Length: 57
Image (cartoon, rainbow, N blue to C red; front, side):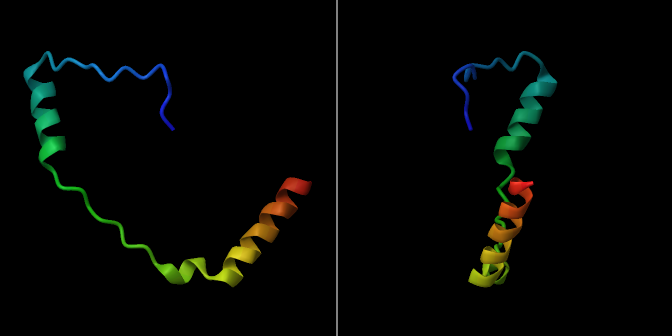
């Protein structure tokens, strides 16, 4: 969650910071594959029950 105090302005004032920024920008994002079997309705219900038990203590 972004905060209102976050300042989007930044300065790359050294050669090392410029190279690091270039490396970050040029590296493609790795896609994350989600295993849909982990979120079955039964497992979701069990997770909700465990959470309710933990919060009721």
